[in-house]
Length: 336
Length: 262
Image 1 (spheres, rainbow over the protein chains, first blue to last red):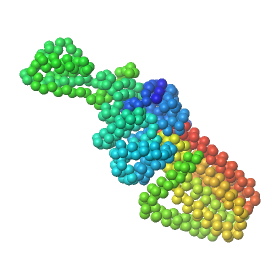
Image 2: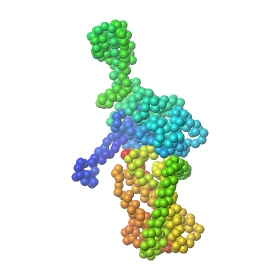
Image 3: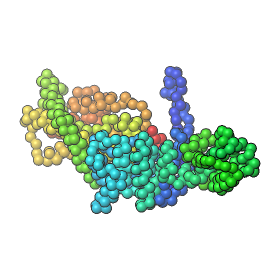
Image 4: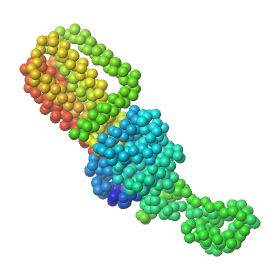
């Protein structure tokens, strides 16, 4: 479905010299700096996957998406999506993809979304009953029926965004690109859009690529995550693996009935690879690196050796993980 | 091509729908357009009251040329009115969206900024020509109508080509350029008989920025100035050549855009 091998994109950036004299020199002799926005990335995606591309601003996400949507021509590498080479067979290729750029609208400002859909239908040559039924389904599932006939300029951001998603799907693409689809939306709308995407993915086997800053999007939708940094792909694998790799593991906070010291608990646990720290006289926090096998053991050992009044489990969320990745950039990770 | 035509009718329909959405606005614009054209008309007549002849052109002949010029200009500006191309498509990045749609990108840009209200220019032009033709007691054969249509289309293509080329400069330079206003100043000269200018300007207006082909030369055919028949017949060729040049520059521009992005 998506095959990308050694994809590269270099930009030549004009380096302006400082000062008036510099500006004058620039007139005749310009200095350029070559910047690798995307540096040798490779990955494959099967049909029907939902996956996320994350990374800090300037990590090369947008450039990658732009190359994948055929807008930019790569400087190197191979790329084949839906059986097309995007930048070469652009007009054919774009019929098989849908694109939502969160910051830009594809709806006509003065028209109602319904009229925009009609126009898009003729742009994509969607005809007949099947197209109508499909549109009806989109309208129903995104719950945009009540405002679909109002001019776009009168819609709220959440309403508009749902219409944008519908607009990008008019031609029933096999692959959907969503670039920051939930920026600025409230929780309810986010949830609606996510539910819709999940359902679409299940029933239509539609492949969805998401770039986002919102970690909850990823948690709600994706199994697979790609992390980019400085143009390189630094992680490609399951969300669970990402958690394990960069997560802080699981933390368990025990509340004891009697005063208990760290040493006492340590003695019980032996040389288990875990970190103990004192919360207060009655409470101890245990940090476990790899959660799956260790957690039951720690729980049962501590519970059977002491009088425990309360247990609190703290799961590291993906947000922390992402922060961890960004702060420990030097680590190199094998491709999952 | 068939698709683009079909889309054109769709966009036209949507244009009127969105315009009609602002009812009051639509009506007032309709009126102000008409008033604008009438003032234009009166202004030209007043100006030419004081000019009797230019070289061997009479006042009415010059009015006729002006009337002719208005027609292809109106046709052209109906379809090519993306004046804010740099701002909207390059700086705000709408070009990305255009490139993710399966229709020729120039056609999309044209359709999105289509301005059917420019059609009033055609009407004004025809009225002015009619007035001048009446004064000059010109007679026309039936095939002159067909020739008129052909010449108008050709002249519009010249405009379209030059305009597309200028707009495409935005792809190469990220800052606003001063070229466009300069060229639009030059186009004014095409409305007057070229033999009043010196040789350099005449060559410029004929071969380099061929604005003489949107005014004097084709109009000269209807004024029965046989000296210019050759030029008049050359209009379609120039139209095609310059339109192709415009398309080529545009295409190179899009390739540059794909190479560098914004």
